[in-house]
Image (tube, rainbow, N blue to C red):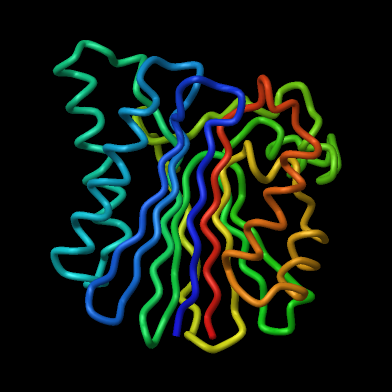
Length: 242
C-alpha cells in the first residue's frame, strides 16, 4: 500500500511556478514535481506542461519499458517546441523529478535542483538525487562542504533543466529498487529543502504516522525559518510504502 501527500505554496511570491501531480494506472503510481525557473519568463507554463506530459503518458499505459526515458524526452521536446512557437527560446524552463512506484519496483529520474530523498526502511539512512547546479559541482570538487549548499550565494545557479538544450549529460536516473514496506520518499523543490535538514526529515519521518503529518511537520520548519514575505515557492510530495 502507498500513503502519499502533495503540498505546494507560493511562499512570498504572487505567482506559483511550482507544480505537483500524481496519478495511477491500475496499481501503479507516478508522482511528478517541477519548479519553473523564476529567472525565466513563464516558468509556471513550463512546470505545468512538463508535469502534464509525464502524467498523460503514464495514464495512457503505466510503467511500460523505457517509461522514464520516453517521458522525459517527450516533455523536453514539447517544451522546446512551445518555446519555438512562442519565440521564447530563453524562457520557459523548469526542473523535474519523477517517482514511479509499482507493486514490484520503484525508480526515479531528476533534472535541475529539485530533489528526491529516499529513506531506507530503518529510517536512519538516506540517499538523494544530485543537484545539477554550480554549488553541487563545488561540493563534488571539494571546494565547499555539503552543509554549505543551503547558504551559498550561488545556490540558485542551475545549469541543467527542462527547456534548455541538452548536451551529452541530461537527466539522472536511479537504479531499480525492489518495492518493500518501510521505504519512504520525499520530492522537494529548493524552496522547501533549503529550510529542512536531512536529520529533521528523518526525525519527523520516524515520529509521524502518515505522509500528510510528515509533510506538515517539515512545512512548519519552512515557515519558521524563511521570510514568508519574500521566500520562494515551496513544494513537496511525500510517499510512504506501507
